[in-house]
Length: 339
Image (cartoon, rainbow, N blue to C red; front, side, top):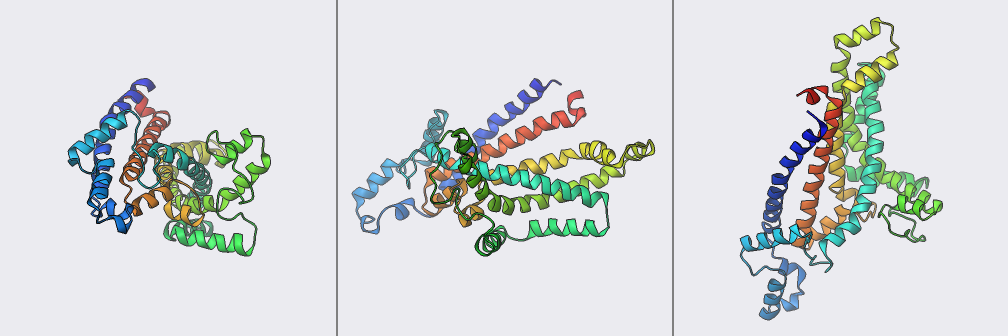
């Protein structure tokens, strides 16, 4: 099977999935028992029937749910995600404003997590049941078990407040101005603007929240890497490679890790998608203006157009991530190319 055929087959499966996702997102947003009118109108106006009726008409709440859904679907096909009740701005513009911060943080955290998790998993598998194995497994358990908000507060308290060796909350120091917006990624935009000082400041603010999120996904990656590597290391072809005098590092990295990559790539993809969906607690503690904070504010204010827009975005992110993982499978597993 060619790559084009394989990709086309996956894309054809994605289309009905996305349509189903729009329906589920609509149901979730409209299943909330609270009335958005009570949240978004001042208490003094709630008894004014004319104002309440105008609010319902403005946001389409006076129409039957099925009509609301098809109106939403029609607007969606035109690239219109609706208008936020809270910000009064198009939801697409709000998402475009907040999403780059989450992409930047999630990417850095995933890179950290891959290096930490894969490294710990390989070490743990190669030196199984030795002291370094127990240490690596303990680190993995801590990363998975300790709540993210605890790690976030601990890191801020120790490394920023007490030791002063790490930058604090926010994407930049408060005395600095944001770089001219090109991509929305401060590190990239700083370099494009020829401002290495801004780049270093933006990168320093990524370290603490990036490590907090990285420790969690590193625990997941480490455990999967260890399990997969232990299975591969016991294979006959690994013993054959050693018997031929191949160096142990080449045996482990080339023959072992390469054949153990399928489950590792899967968990990396899912972890990255999870971070892109918005790490609400981490973004809140580090005052990170990402999609997680935007979703939290939309939920607390019953901003259903924003809730639906972000829910659809999150689902789309997972679909795209799974598609990328499937494409990587094509290159990693020769059985797919031969099918």
